[in-house]
View (cartoon, rainbow, N blue to C red):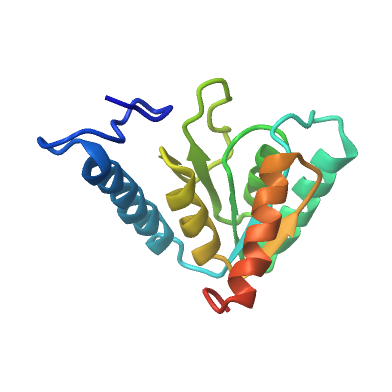
Length: 166
């Protein structure tokens, strides 16, 4: 039996295992993530950035200020829900009396969710998370980060260019 990093079986036969079980897990993530999206009662801006940025960084402060501005204009702010710039954006959304949302991901050696979330969901699979993250958003903000930030930054315009989102 082969397993992915979350311990889900990805090959095998019968008994709900294999690809069927794997796709069921992804489908469950879609259903629950889209359910979280349905709870957002306003326009949404997604923000991404490094999970390793310290509170004293100019990027942390910038993320907080930008998210606060969007919140004051009536937008919900969605992030990956982790620490660093994600935390700063969620914190700024709450500071601006806005809705703060975190779509996290289960990773073997990573941090948990931050303390500035009104709505949160932790996905097991990147694909479901990315779709729910992007589908609910009307605007995107990318700040300093690494490969995860770059992945998100390129996902947004690709989906716009291919008419998957407007």
